[in-house]
Length: 124
Image 1 (cartoon, rainbow, N blue to C red):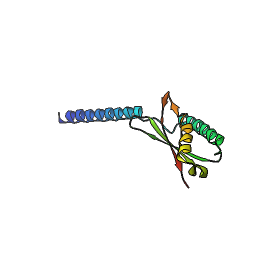
Image 2: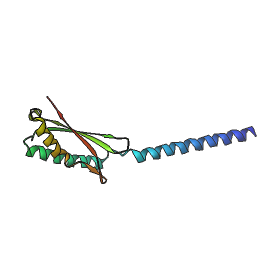
Image 3: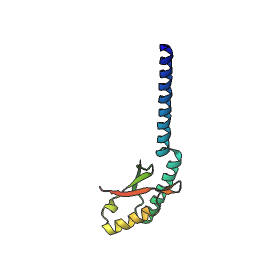
C-alpha cells in the first residue's frame, strides 16, 4: 500500500512539474518576439538604408549609425537610433529637430504595428 502511494504522489508531482513548465514556456513565447531573427534584421537593414539616404541628401553622407532594440512590457519593440557626425553636433536645436522629424517619419513597422523610435545624436 505504501509503495502505491509513493508511486501515485511521484506521478502527480511529475505531471504537475511538466504542465507548469509547458505553460510557462508557452506564455513566454507569446509575449517576447524573437528579435534576433532574419526577419527583423532585414527590416532593420532596410530602415537603416532609408535613414542613410535621408542623411546623405542632407549632407551627412559619412554619418555613423547604430540601431539598438529592446522588448517593452507589452512585447513590442523600442528602438534607439544613434547618429554620429561632427556637423550634426554644430547644428542648432531647430535644425536638429527638423532632421529628427525627417528620420522618424518612416518608423519601423513590424507585422502592421509601428514600433517606438528614439533618435539620439552622439557628440564628439
